[in-house]
Length: 227
Image (cartoon, rainbow, N blue to C red):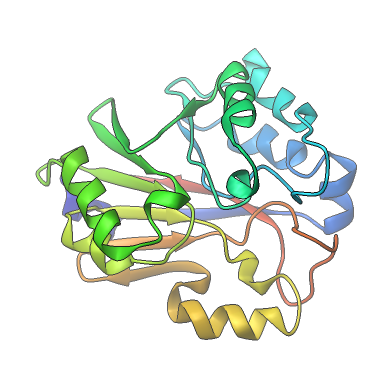
């Protein structure tokens, strides 16, 4: 499947649930029971919470369940929340749960290029461009870029990425941040959009940050189907 075909054949399905359901099931467990039955799972929304809270790894246990492991693997890229403190121990726990952490690298999975660039390497346009060049994208093959925030989508499109998957925005989570997020990220604040030949999907995320509430946005885990 060539890169350009991702843009024309990608379909999305959204699993959503109420805040109460997510909290009852440790933020993501309920939805992951559905999403992790897909061929590949990608985690681009932050897994860590507030920097003042002790780091907890209990929500990673769902990835250890053999019956929920996607046959082609689960991939994670570091977000800004993981970088509030030294992320080394947290990333070690993520790896120990069976999730592959992508750090400025590419995984070739069944003909699909899965690229991962952590938040700190994707915030500055010039550096982000250099990282993508160093990874080496084969533009004749399909590619998915996992990066936490949709900050520089034009850079990814110019590098030949077929689909970028991000999170970060939470769709603002609640008013007035829903307006602020939309002002900053415009059409890329949420959902499936296109820039040039590349598709961009920005997820509102499965949990919350700060106050455990949402107004004007809902949690989700997204299942992509490629034909």
